Image 1 (cartoon, helix red, strand yellow):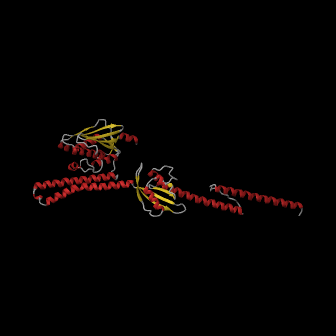
Image 2 (cartoon, one colour):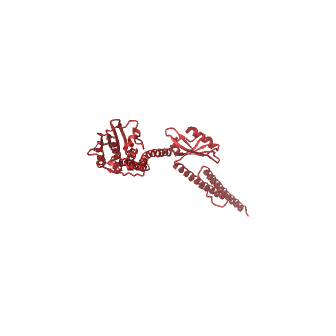
Image 3 (cartoon, one colour):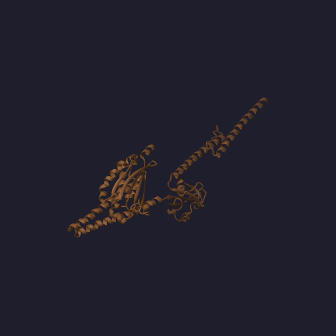
Length: 423
């Protein structure tokens, strides 16, 4: 081998060695860039080094690591987003506090329930919600004494009754998970149910006792005396009719309060409804010496409503007026238009209602004069039914009265034309 061949061989070896070193250096730089981007959070980057050497194997290992991390992080993000959507959709309030009692997480339901601001996270829960019973509950839950739900009442701008359950969190992050269930409406409905049952029982007791007493008297020998028998049969019939009216009114009110009573939304001409209702009561009013009258303007617009419900409303108001107005009184049904709404008014010149009773006249079983109401056959549910029916038609009802001068019931309804325009 000549010196020339030796020099060529050395030059070739150096060139190949340089190329290999450059390739390895490029691969190392590529792997370094990939590693840096991975540490910066870019899990989509890949080395994709060709070949089968150690650097190529290392590149493929980094690619597998990046792919695994990307998949895992995607799953964690999906799980986080799912949990976030669940927390946002929950009606129950949820709050997580750390071992020091500072808020770590709070969902929108609890923010709305307790009127918490956006800066609630990081604050002490007991500074945000000041309540001694809640403080006791947190202490007991932290010490593992009791995790049963506790009902507490929260005062403030939006008073609430809430059921709170606190559970310790296990794992590295110690703290408490508290779930708040708003039971304010549930307790209100329970109170209404108890009042309704108590009032209904009281109202049913009187006519049932009268029927039983009259029946017992008839069985004891009054049947043999024609005049006495007729008198006691009248008592039975009158109280049976009162029981029937009371049951029908309770069923009607139950349908209204449970939204089973579906009102229609159609054009109703008051010029047609009012005469029909007055015709039903005219004979009875004349026998009692009470004058019935109507004053409806010629160009009165139609209203949005249900004809059957409107007849029921007017019938209740006119019937009440006839019951309580003395001889010589006047009952007037009138109507007028004001600011796109129609006011239907039933006024009388009867005894009127004292101011202290006015706020409660639309309550169930509330009577201004209980003795007088039972005497004339009132159930105490008529005005409550009126209120529910008017509100079901998106209207409003109110009363104005002066003792000794009479009462005025005002029903405000939407004009049919304005409803059509809105649609």
